[in-house]
Amino acid sequence: MFVVIAIFIGVASLIGGYIAIHHEDLSVAIIASGLVSLFASIIFLLLAAPDVAMTEAAIGSGLTTLIFFYVLNKIRQRND
Image 1 (tube, helix red, strand yellow):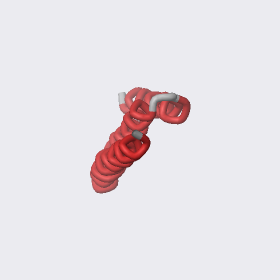
Image 2: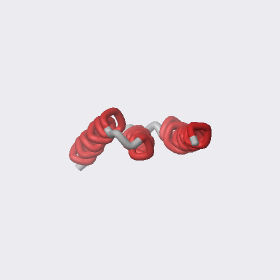
Image 3: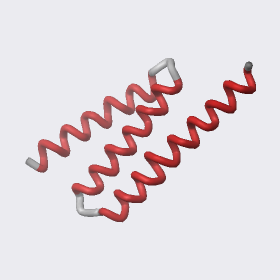
Image 4: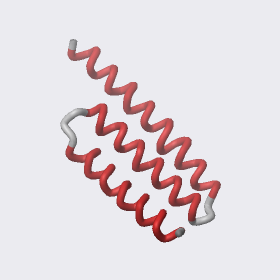
């Protein structure tokens, strides 16, 4: 069962990475990037590394996504 879950999360992470790189809308790309980081934290949790998983979820998925949206908002305000 562990292998099936790990493969599913790995494939979902690859799909999210592809969307993050190739999507035209930056908001969708930022969300896809955050999902890739969230999937990575789940993989770390499955591999018995809860400290790394919590750090990845907090910083990689949460804070980085928030900073990306903040910068995107500032860029859009400057262009208007």
